Image (cartoon, rainbow, N blue to C red; front, side):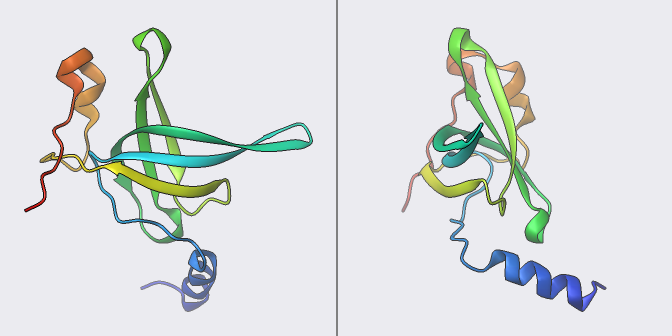
Length: 119
């Protein structure tokens, strides 16, 4: 049983956030606010969501992309963080697992995920 004060606080944090419905295997683009000195800018981070964990305001996603020289880069983002301005689902992936950590060992075309076909 959760404390009602904590639940009310979490509901206040979630208000105004427009989070799309997505899951592991989907390719997402996150608009992340980056602060450098006294300047702020928005940088897009696009990759495959390989894990989604937690609940409420503590929910996080792990996004993996392939950077320069074919090096895999993973970042963990709290979904309800103030540094995330927008989350966009680019394409839906067809996977049968909730956690796609096996993608870390695959390279090149073997690491591709089939697109989910709508009926």
